[in-house]
Image (cartoon, rainbow, N blue to C red; front, top):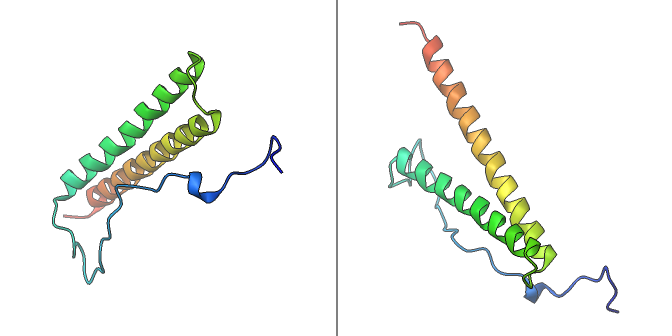
Length: 105
């Protein structure tokens, strides 16, 4: 039954790319070969690219290009989650900095 609220098959979804297995950790920083700053920069660049993709999808939808509104909403939600993650990362880094500053000398 193909109605307005029908859901397509699973094969229509694109697989998530860019993920890699991290391996098991045995101690602080174990398994990480890149410096923290580099990892942070790459993560922020990925979050920024999600936002740029979402803006492009919205622009395409508004301009009348043949774009699925479902795909646009997925990209917008991915961008929203990436921004929320970035905010939480900033908050945690700020809390860690404040905790270090409160340590007695």
